[in-house]
Image 1 (cartoon, one colour):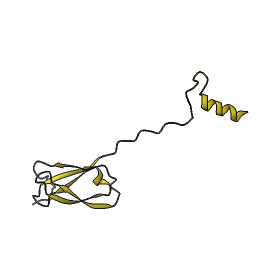
Image 2 (spheres, one colour):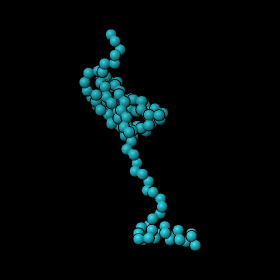
Image 3 (cartoon, rainbow, N blue to C red):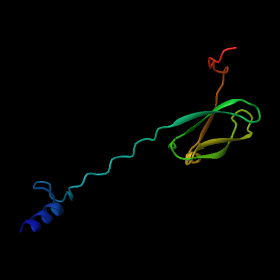
Image 4 (cartoon, rainbow, N blue to C red):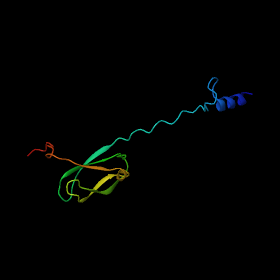
Length: 104
């Protein structure tokens, strides 16, 4: 019958490819590399600027996380999307303050 023929084809594979174990299903796609985001913050102790990089979804509710200032090592609370605390990278932002165009 047709059902037996299909079952045999799935088990044995197409003609000429016996034993391939063809199942008719595509393998799952490899996971995409998450997009890393950066947020600028300022140390509560030495006031130096630093960036916090993470791959969390920015639409998640924000939570307060303590990170270490890369300049002085002080614990600084920052607000980040939930899940960001799992893969943080904190980097110093050297150089002059950016000109925001606020005027004098």
